Image (cartoon, rainbow, N blue to C red; front, side, top):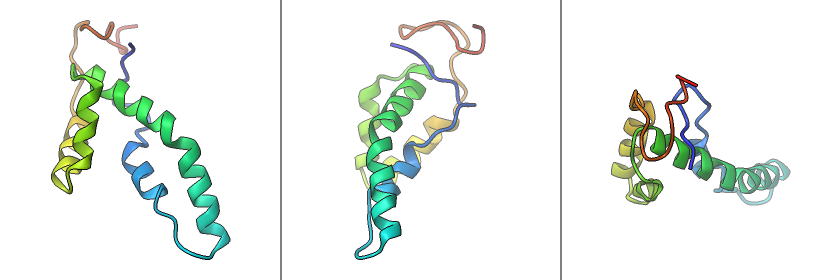
Length: 95
């Protein structure tokens, strides 16, 4: 497992919006294709960011709780990572 510092782009929140296509326009089809292509990389970024603050990746599922989950995920995303090495690896700032 690897860690991900908060200075990296966090696309996890925006990916949720990318998977909601509108009906009938080319732009929305393109938006959906791009969102679908970025889904797995966004999950990876989210998991690695949670690892940086010492939380397991399964805590990412909290986003499935309407509003509260999104607020929690945003709070965890902006939280400073643990300064020392944890079970997921060394501090990415120190490397």
